[in-house]
Length: 94
View 1 (cartoon, one colour):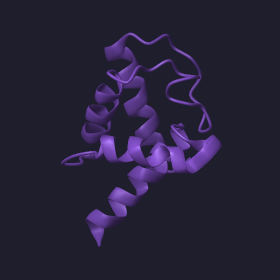
View 2 (view 1 turned 45 degrees about the vertical axis):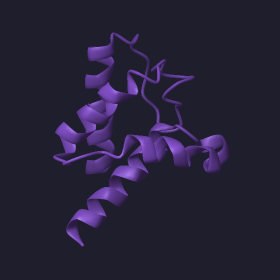
View 3 (view 1 turned 45 degrees about the horizontal axis):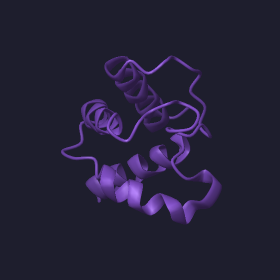
């Protein structure tokens, strides 16, 4: 497992603790809403935890959410969240 994936999984675990979301196994294809049980308000905690874990100034959660419907079945998954973080980190180092 690569660094970004581990960091996102860590951030999701932190956010679940803050939001008191029941613990379920985190899988890359798990939906943040359907499988993991996050609400739209709890996604704010996810963004804050990602910012903290990956040392990002800001995670564009609304832009990520708005782009998800174009992904079809992989929308709102842990994998798509990891990919967004990879893109942000690539942009930061470019």
